[in-house]
Length: 129
Image (cartoon, rainbow, N blue to C red; front, side, top):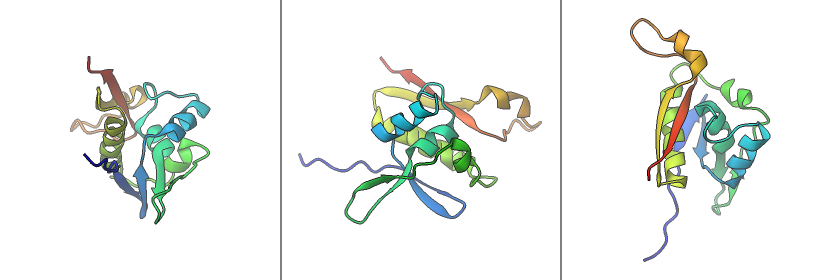
């Protein structure tokens, strides 16, 4: 069986395309921000995972200094695709865990009357033993 490259999810934010690759560099970045995969929001994880592959397939992290720098680029309506990309990236890196999204606690009060949310969501990660 020939090994195949992982097809990491891609998202477009403010017209810029990013690949979301949950890698050692992403874990390192989250640690620098005082976060773990278990307590980071989707925007924090996306900011840590964002990067691109060059023509020869070499990875280059975007290297956002702070998650807010990534969030500053977001437009209304970007969040749903971003959350899906983050969940997919985590699942590709850790196929044995169960992941889903839930609203961030600070956003619970921001729920609109129709039940929709505005603002960042955080992933939920469970070991699927």
